[in-house]
Image (cartoon, rainbow, N blue to C red; front, top):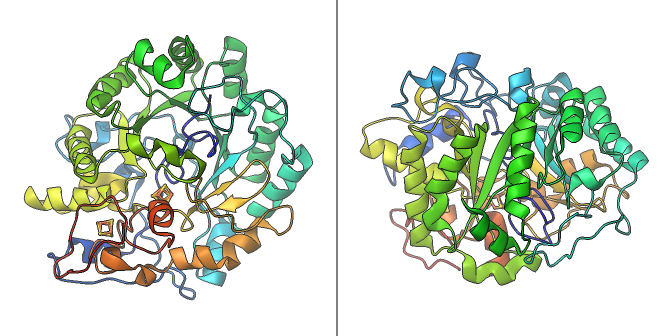
Length: 467
Ligand code: SF4
Ligand code: SF4
């Protein structure tokens, strides 16, 4: 069984840009202003890979304004009983005072290159898994896969990563707890100044494992739950007993003080059950609930028929906007870049501006972060903008991670919003949204083409969507 940050071959539901948190302060003041401008008012095209700009991030004026559970002052959409300060639960890396990409190496790297340092890296440290979910075409099994990075190789890559950043590193799989040296990897990340978190199916989380998580300072794990009941979840996964085992693992982790995030991939099969899953998550006392809009790419593209049509996407994301107002969880949609357009449209209709004070980090981050502050490393060391983006930009066995991050043409294209094509290129929301580049690649063959699952038509746009 794979998890939402798991095996891209197994299931195209990796949370890759916002797992365990959000990307703090991605947008510039100008980009925010452009997105707030009246429709058709301003076209933006601010390349992020420009030279030496120090305005590439907008710093919070204080932790009380943060919208992440790591900070006491949550702040998603307004209207939260007790005010934004009571909005979010704790349990993420930032609850330990960790600020990904905020360390001296990252700041020096940005100053030197004009490129943002990676803040979140999802790393498939193994493809092995203890389960065999029906939808897992990678057929993950016990035992090491050929070419998997060794412990020494992993340490070397960490050594290189920390020369340019202090990211959150999501250790995922497969099932990362299958890797016998997982705790050495965790310790090494900590030792070098990165923050490891774990994406797991939770079925292996016993008291002993949860104790280790706590002892090795894992701030949060993420666990995929696709239905609110065992019947639906087990049927979807084709693994009887899987739901109960994952729920038990979640409870054990919480008992030992490890933060838990529940991830749900929204498809036609469960779109009408998302509210129930939210309530299940709340009842379990977890810290975060992230919904993922299915990205059926690469070897998972046969899930295409389960993808919601664009209009349904819009409905679910609109529901999420309103549910965020009262949810006690850190609740956010992921892999749905146009959510950041929807936030602004709905806020405007309510007569509000999307400010950090009212909307927390939702006001400061953008939709697609692949290649911008996020990337994926596969079990054999291939680097991709995210796990859905079916293109390898280099391999860490052949070239240092830092070089690939800096020099890859694809990464640099993704950082330059002025290169976006079709209606995304013409859209006033492109800096805050950007469309899903993996979907564009899958459907059009061009990662810079228009996002095929967005209903929005930019004012004045008359062309056809390439999708
Ligand atoms: S047209 Fe593209 S950039 Fe604009 S909101 Fe839709 S997906 Fe985002
Ligand atoms: S390409 Fe799509 S799936 Fe990948 S990070 Fe961007 S929005 Fe998420």
